[in-house]
Length: 267
Ligand code: FBP
Image (tube, rainbow, N blue to C red; front, side, top):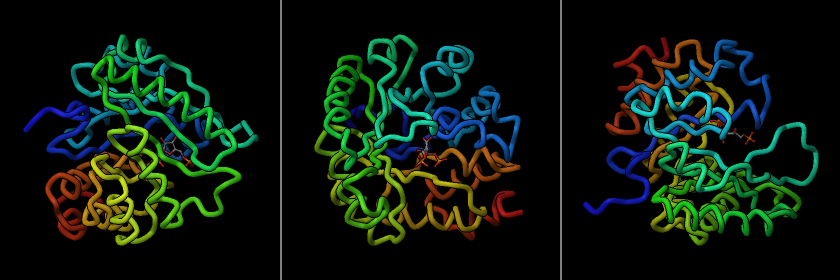
């Protein structure tokens, strides 16, 4: 098989991206369920689990911790991000250049685009620079394709999610990270609209093991190429158990029942 831009952040064409940009996007509140996870080292350790194909972090975290993990984990460097303190129309400043991402050892870059925001035009222009810079440095491109803002009535509506997957495809992302639109049919439509761009499901707020695995299983059956997950892993008491189970569902095609019976998830 020919090499692709996402080989370094996937396994057999599937990805399990451990997202850990929550300290910026949501604030310390996301570490409350598991206070140790405020320490990035705890989450980098999880990223060395076989199931994890890349860890997604902001520049400051990558600078400080990735040198200790570069042999054990692939780096997806998030290039923009906004704090939850910002109350304006959705927008997200670019805080890293592709050159610097490559210098930090990134295998791929991540970029949030809020389609439907009044700031969409600026974000799309910034995406062009990030995308072409990533191509110059042989890094993959993952778009957090999040419709949000004045032009969007329902962020997880079927047509809206399919549209956001299409935006990621047409602007050149290798992987579109979308919220699960609520049904396998809607997910398959997003996958169809994304063409040769892979689609991964965004984890969302924490649910119980069984219900999370069922959603992941149905996304995979609908053609998703994996998931990008944060809270549903690091907020759990036993994050390794859910990673063991996710490994079976994402990479081995196991059912939720099989994953629950063969691992400590759900215990
Ligand atoms: P989760 O799995 O915790 O939802 O993380 C995925 C993610 O996209 C993070 O990268 C980001 O910080 C967060 O969700 C954004 O969440 P929201 O959609 O609530 O702004």
